[in-house]
Image 1 (cartoon, rainbow, N blue to C red):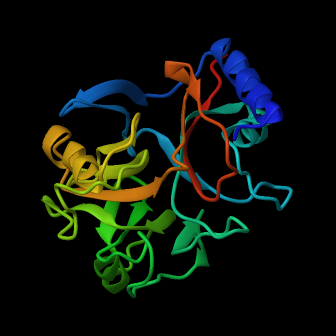
Image 2: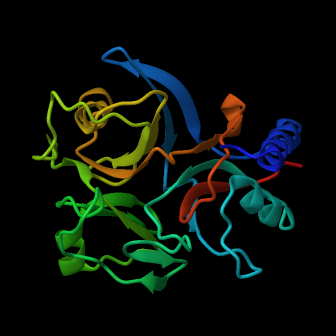
Length: 252
């Protein structure tokens, strides 16, 4: 349930951002695929300042998009896109591997386990200086790419152009879900949130069959949230753990 205070914070954030010019190339749009509604935001990691956020300068978890935006404002910057970026414990610490600004905060978890996170193969979203990739966890662990930011989640939605082998076309497990997909050359990154409850099979297909992305990773379900000021949207509700976002300077 959304509190009154959270509603006010979200409304204020959108009001402030509506009056600010920003410099960024993120493109968010509403789309339909197979009769289902989604919102997709496309990022170019070569041009956009794509980051992960966990702990604020105070030492507390950021938790909300508005908290990140308030911190960035002190440096003349703003959050032009945001999304929850992986599963977290009750203290909002990452469940799996997490790297922020080159510092490893949580190690790689390579083994199977309970819940969606442990439904192997799972994967890691890795942001480097000029590209970003969704990489299956065992491949990542063997190669250890130089990620400035990384977050582990699961399951993988699409692996080398194929849907996760455990997904059932006739599944009745439906939730609002969010995830990220990447192109083979790492220059195209698309974040998607479903605007209605969908199955894993349906959600994987929008990445593979509609967006044409060979790798995609599930980030979470039911707590899925999106910050897309260009669509006058900034979701609020439960406090989050890892958050992915694009930072841009406020235009003079």
